[in-house]
Length: 63
Image 1 (cartoon, helix red, strand yellow):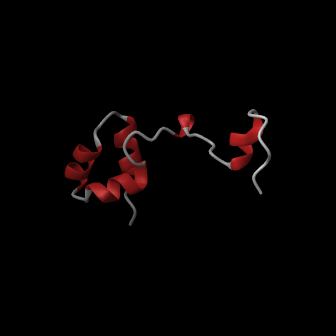
Image 2: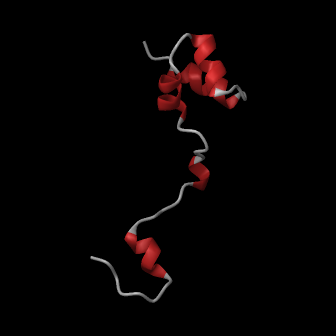
């Protein structure tokens, strides 16, 4: 039985990943797997594809 929804709810409520792991008796690795690595914010993710990088620099396109 997955505890992912419970982990995500606790994380959204402001608990640290370490505290979530302690409360649910799971590893911190498991918590990171379900709520994301430290510092990751999906709203701020970067698109580092070659099309994006080359789009505004006037450089030849990478194939």
